[in-house]
Length: 193
Image (cartoon, rainbow, N blue to C red; front, side, top):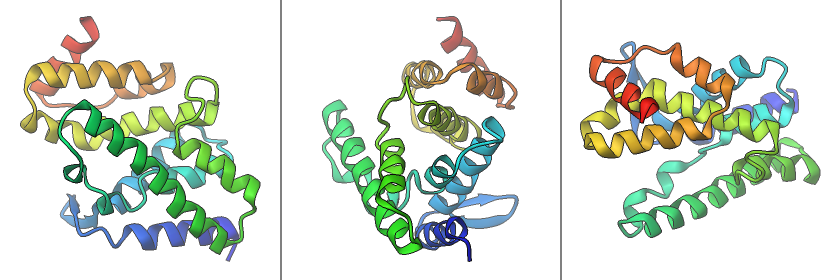
């Protein structure tokens, strides 16, 4: 097996352990496995000639996320930021271990870690493609569920922040997605405000 396919298999096997599920078209998926596949699809859509490191990163961006839930950290912005920082390092550490198992060298692993740790967001084209893809996965598969959990003001803030993270290719793809009437209205409000 080629090492890229081996790494994908290792990442997928790990993410299939997620006890949380997502139901799409009547099929139950382990949540992080499903989202990793969707992130990979968006990266391939946005960057058809994506390099190996970016493809690898797309399949392990949130590897094992269920093992470090947000609820394990204090409420509020400081707790959220600590969770995100520690979670990114956790993802990078798990991915590094699995990449070593697949036969990758230290330089390739370092490049992957850089993407997972979101280093060089505005200067690294691979990191920006990943950020666009992450926002698109959120908008396509998680946004409507968020509408039920958060008030309008918070959702508008989330949407503005997501829009600000994306560059033109991501924004154009986002405008091509379909949303509920409420979802569409809030996006309009976020983009006009």
